[in-house]
Length: 204
Image: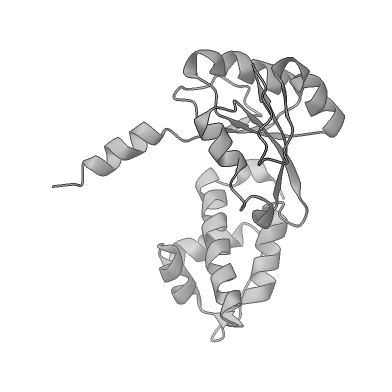
């Protein structure tokens, strides 16, 4: 599979389909039509079928998709069939809140360590909070490829340069800035203020 040729939006929608399939499994549903799954995911059935064709042929005409089989395939595509180690950088209010979120492991992600310029242990957290200068060595030693960035905007690019040099390939960026990274590094940015501004347009 050549992931470069697959649109990022299709990869993103796979996660949405997986959430819908999880709910179907919880309700003991064995098969689902493309129309029903697409409706639950908030997309058109033609879009869903197009997204899935990047990864193979699924479903039986007249019967739909086998929920367990499709969920397993999507898990493999997204790398959820094993725990993916992740680090978090910047243990402020947002970083601390994310460290307390219990859903990461359920979705296949293991936050193995957090880093801060002034590390301070937090009694209710089992995740080690380490000094920022130890971060590159930790990334290399534990072969971490994914990071969550929750540092101030004026520190974000410098920290990004460090983690990319150490081998990080994917960044979930909560810092309110655009990061400059090599082409092979993927960045998903979440600017909470921008999201709220976008929502405010629809309030009358």
